[in-house]
Length: 290
Figure (cartoon, rainbow, N blue to C red):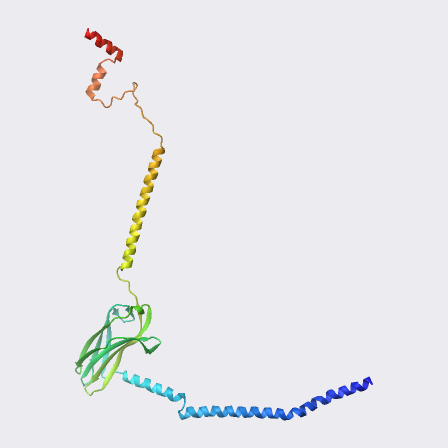
């Protein structure tokens, strides 16, 4: 009996995997077909996106428009091939790589007309830009109009000045200086004579009010310390002198009388006359009176 049960269990173990495979075969095929359909749909969606981009209905159009605007700005910011410009910083002198915060900045712009037509210098403007993106403005300065005509084969120089804000001290900024001019035919040109990153520095000049009062306070404190030290040393010396015992100094004379204060003539008379005791002098006076 036990052997029969064993055989039945063995047969069940052999037949059961085959039955399960047969019953689930349809579902397995369906799952595979669904996966294929999803992959085909994804391919179709990707193809649609590619078509939209190719047709110009996607982001590529915006990118193209932005590139066109940048190209237009670059074309507008170009100068005439018949003109040469140069910039020279006079205050502070140098290349303009470092500018003082809150101080006057001056520079000269030289213009040379190498063509055969007249040029008119319209204006100069300057602005601070974000150093990582020069299209972002931080501070604009007033444009100064000149309306100065420059004949062919002639030169002209104009001056411009501005004050960098003190809040920009210790920061790098992009400085853009543009010269606007036009020729006799009415063609307008805007040439960037300076367009690079500069450092705004803080200059310590002289002595400000806070530093002056700080020095006065330190001087008064030093005088107070000197007075206190002198008073302490004086009181310490007086206490030490009061504790020292007083000693009387006698004379070195044998009779205990100091004759140094007497005149020399009196001392000579005293030496000539014999010394007498008070009793002898009294007896002598009585005898003389009788």
